[in-house]
Amino acid sequence: MKAIHARKLIKSIDQTYTEMFSGKVYTVGKGAVSIRNHSGKAENTVIGVHGFLENHCYFTQSYQDATTELILLTCSNYHIPVSGPSPEPAPWEVPIKSLEGTIQYDAKILNQAMENLPTTENVRVHGHSRGGAVVLEAIRQRPELYTHADIVLEASVLPQGQLHPLVTALLEPVSHGMWPWVIRFINSTPSSSYGQSFFGKMNGRKKQLLNKLFTATKDHLTIVRNIEDIMTWMEKTSFEVYDHITHGTFLIPKVDRILDRSAMLSSAENSPNSVRIIETDASSHFITLDNQKWLPTLDGSSEPRLQIAQ
View 1 (spheres, rainbow, N blue to C red):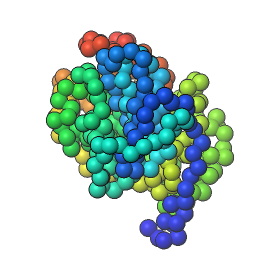
View 2 (cartoon, rainbow, N blue to C red; view 1 turned 135 degrees about the vertical axis):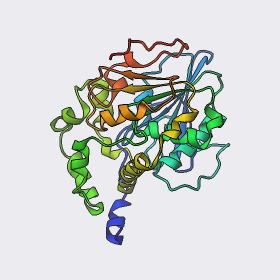
View 3 (cartoon, rainbow, N blue to C red; view 1 turned 135 degrees about the horizontal axis):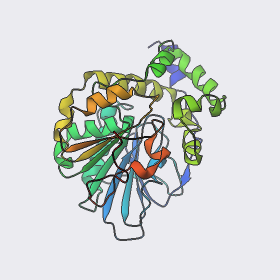
View 4 (cartoon, rainbow, N blue to C red; view 1 turned 90 degrees about the vertical axis):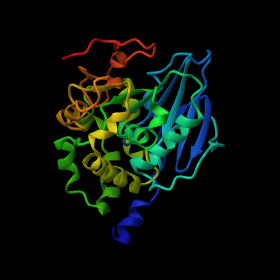
């Protein structure tokens, strides 16, 4: 990468989105882990891993029960989307030697959280999009931590998967040096002009969370590195990464204009028989923002809130 392009890419991006948060926020390497306060005795633990250009608020409205201990990752070099508590170093933090901004790095943040934070025996790890790949990579790195975990992979980046052809066509002509210009252009363009194509039918929560995607990271370099790493991870990761999932669910949207749906489904079909594949009627990549009814219950029952749509 030419030095002039690198300088443009490391220029900082100002944070534009936060939500009030009650709980503790720990920094872990270049990322963070937030633990939401819960008013009842914790019966279930959910760890959420957000997707590319998203933030941990993606999960907060899906898991509101007073007895749910909600632990939320902020991936490396992403802004922590909270107003309220001040981040503090995690007392159990172990230095991470992987390259920041990669799936491998963020998987190590997840594994530190998984090893040190859940206080219940009923643990779900829910990854959306790129976050799903982070979950799978974390399981590959430390399979013993996930023996009894319920894994939810929502519209996930998967082994041997692909980007949607529309996204590929948009990315191909963009060089490293063009990214700062492209992002400024996107951020100055009303999301209504492109949102429907990529995000599907909008609702209030989707508008909130998807309005300023390109300010989720702290710099442009993280955006470029995330994209390149997602494509490399999909290409180089084999289906063996599924071998250590003992219980879980793939949520596949009916329409996805971010990832290639058919490649996603084909990959999921290589998982163990104990892992369910739910083909939803969701009209976009953002399944649980479209409708939370597709999310499997936390009570250990075998059925999701809505029957599988085949």
